[in-house]
Length: 195
Image (cartoon, rainbow, N blue to C red; front, side, top):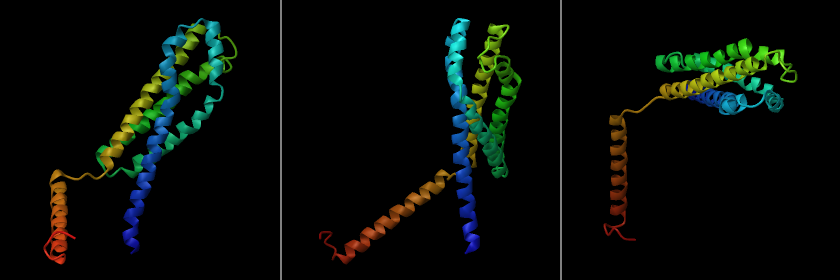
C-alpha cells in the first residue's frame, strides 16, 4: 500500500513545483516586460521628466523576491526532471535565462541605481546612465520571456503523453462498455427499449 502512494506523491510534488515555477517565471517577466514596453517613450523624455518618471519605481525592488523564487524553483524543477533529457535541457535553459537576468542586473542596472541614488540624483551623463539602465531591463525582459517559454516547454515534455493508438483503444473500450451497458439495460427492460 505504501509503495502505491509514493508515485502519486511524486507526481503531485512535480505538479506543484511545475505550477509554481511557471507562475514565478511569469511574474518575473512582469516588471522587465513593463520596462521593455515603455522603453521607447521613456528614452524620448527630457532628462528632468525622465528623473520624475523614475520615482514611480519605488518599491519595485520587492520583485527581487519573485526572481529569487524563480531561480530556486527552476533549479528544483531542473533537478526533478533530470531523467527526461528534453525536459532537463528546457528546464536548465530556463534556469540559466533567469540567472542571466541577475548577471545583467548586478553588472548594468544596479550600478546605475547606486550612481543616481535610485534616480533621486542626476547622474553626470544622464543620457548614458538611462540608456544603460533601460537597455539592461530590455535584455532582462528578453531573457525572462525565453525562460518562460523554456519552462513551459520543459513542463510539456516532462508530462507523459498518450500515443494515438492508445487513445483509439481507449475509445473502442468505452464504446464497447456503452454498448454492453445498453444491451444489458435493454434485456432487463424486456427488450421493448421503452420504460
